[in-house]
Length: 391
Image (cartoon, rainbow, N blue to C red; front, side, top):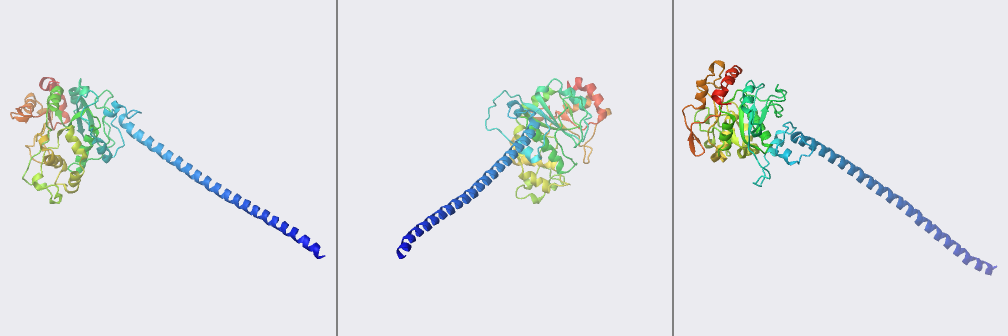
C-alpha cells in the first residue's frame, strides 16, 4: 500500500503544477487584455480631443480669415486685397476699423524710397461738415476735368448721407464718422480721422482740411501746382501771449509740453504726407491735449500748431492758405452771403496786397481758399467763377 501512495504523489504534484501554470497564463492574458483595452481607450480619447481641438482651431482660423478678408476688402473693394492697385488706391472708403486701428494702418510707411510704379501725387480734399454741402455745385465745377489728381473725403454726422447723384465726385466719399461737438476734442478727433482715411491711399501727397462753408478762390491747376511744388506744409502756428493763447496752457502738461512750446493757429490746415503720418502716429502728446485742453482751451486751435512747433517746425510755413475774416470779434469769423459776393471782394481775397513766403521767395498769392460763405452765396459765386477764379 505504501508503494502505491508513493507512486501517486508525484503525478498529483505534476498536475497541480500544470494547473498553476495555466492559471498564471490566464491571469497574465486577462491582465494584458485589460491593459490593452485601457490604453486603447486612452489613445482614442487623445486622438478624439486632438481632432476636436484641430477642428475648433481650424474653424476659428477660417472665421478670423473670413472677418479679416471681409474687413480688408471693404476698404480695397476686391477679393484679393494684396492686389497692388487696390492696396495702393482703395476705391471704397467704407470700413469697420476703430480709430486706433485706422491710425495704426495709416501710419505704415514703406522703408524703400523708390516707388515700384509711376506715382502721380494727388490732393486729398477733406471736408469736415455739419451735414449738407450747400456750395457743392461750385466745388464740382472746380474739380471738373481733373479727376486723376484728387481724392475727396467727407466727415459728416453719423447717419447723415449726402444727397448727390452717382455721377458726382462726392458720391460714395463719406468716411465712417462719429459725433462732433464744437470746441471739444471730438473736433480734433474728426480731423485725425480724415487724415487717417486719406493716408490709406498712397497717391495722396497733400491734405487739405475744409468745411462746408469754404470755397476755392483759384482754379484747380493753380491750387495743384502751388501745393505739390511747396516744400512746406501750411499750418498757422504762432505764440499768442494773451489769455486766448498762453492763457489756455495747462501746467499739467509738464514736463512734456512747456509754455515756450505752446502755439495757436487756425483750424484749417494743409499738410504734406510726411506731416500727416506724424499726426496720426502721435499718441503721447495727443493724449495730453485730450486730458488737459478743455474749454476754454480748444484742441483744434492748439494741438497741431504746438506739435509741429515742437518737432517739425522747419517743415511748416507757419501760415494758413485759407482766408478768413476775424475782424468782427467774437468766437466765430464773419459769414458772407449773396450781397457780399462781388468781383472786387473776390479779387481782394485772391490778392489782398500783402506778401507771404513761398519756398525761398516772396509771393502775393497767399490764400487758395476762403470761408465762411452761406448757401445764398452760391449763385453769385457760380456766375463769377469763370471770370474771376477761372474755372
